[in-house]
Length: 436
Image (cartoon, rainbow, N blue to C red; front, side, top):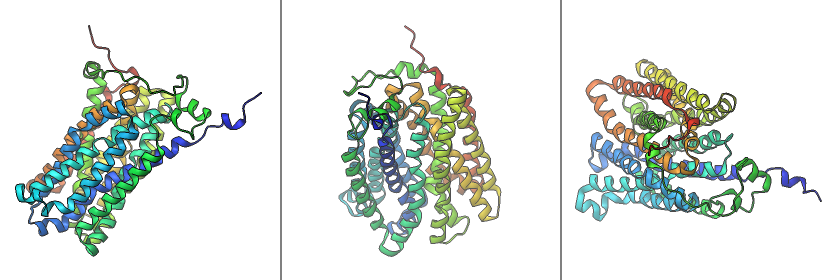
């Protein structure tokens, strides 16, 4: 007896998984970006300086950078369902604590500045597990022909969350005070954590809504398994001896520096330098993040198509190199032009081209080592956030000493450096086996 046609028509559960990951990505960046808007009230209300606020921004990024590899390794070992749930709950609690930190016992011990530094660091520790576990989930749930698009859809939540955050947070801040913005963000995170834990599974074969057709589409020619694969040791020596890994980390470090200029200072740049009002600046501060949202999945789709036609060693690097190079050109153009709306358009385009490369970056880690996609992407994202740790503090210092044109020019140079790094990245070659 032949099987029903529905058994051969793939189900679409993987797209629901990607939608939930997108929702987590959105709340991740709401919790990350809201302080860059509330800083407008927090700085005078709490007696902080711009440099101190930059250090508070950097405390988050430091915690985020230091725990990328442990977060990715936990996902490889225990699965993204459990690790992501715990991570979202953790950082949501500390997001709400941001509102209480200036009046907490911590403030009595280390001062307001110190208490905010500690809380933001702990938010970074929790969020560090997010992107590596997104990549782990995409490696499990998307076939080779969909990985670039899959991770790009997921990470495009960066743009959605960052675009929504400035106007919504500014409205909440103006009407209800800056503390309320953190309470709302923390509660939303708890809700999304519950939805993810209820619906997701670590592997498609374990999900009741995945039929044989979808499982075969995801796995391709690989055998289907309904039991967890035994964890294998992390091939640290192979990571260290593979040039593509080093070039990938260096390029993503440059990416991270540029990205955090937008995430930390773009709103204040529009208000303080380009003379937009508080609410108008919050509205237009969404422009780069709208560009990220549009360009990110397009870049993921393009890298999958080019990889299918020309191979991974062309399909990934072409997208990575051209995206970073065009971001550099757009940023330097926006920094140099006096007319504010043209500058806004070019700088937003720069953010879009920067995130056009996301699919190429993250899918390359899966191409190099699918079994350790969480750990290797954690290594790569550590580089991005070491660059990001430097950016929030160095950018206002450069602006104070040399002007914002120079500060943004440094970001453009680093974007172009990241483009050049792609010349050494060959994902199809895999990891280099260590010499005995």
